[in-house]
Image (cartoon, rainbow, N blue to C red; front, side):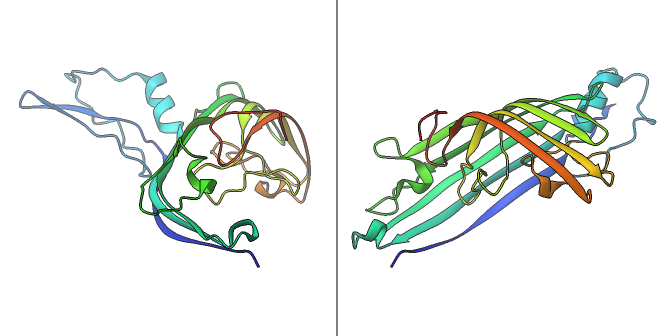
Length: 233
């Protein structure tokens, strides 16, 4: 019998990175950048601010989507591959994903994941941190260009997808990623304006439309315990 279970805890920060205000007071400048909070109004910014307001930069910051996570996860594989050997991992890992605002329908997504072993167990399992002797994974799993207009969205580059046959298998710190082109078209029903402005995988299930069509052509992939993309099976 093969049994898998995991437990652990994660702390996450996700959401928008709001705009910045710079205030001069007693020769000191306090710069506050906050994740997941409403954007601060710039109407009250003094004209004597040491850092002048820039509409383009403010828009890029306030409309970007940032997802960050850092945590510890414990993984145990009992009777690993029917060998009678139990393997375990206690890994430290996390990710940082950024999706830019749209300009004429185009946007960029980039993100990396990492996981490293802690040496807590004698029989370390490579499911979380990769094979010995590396005991660690760090890789840019997302780097794509996206175009979104109305019911149509298309992505090209390194990305996550979620289908019944190929998906990101997100139960470790290193989800499975793919290199290729994918698209979703909502045929019946209209999606939300910001449906694809985050860092989630492209998927039919991610659309609130009644009827959607998805197509993807992937050329390589990076498994959850690999730090490189490959075309091998």
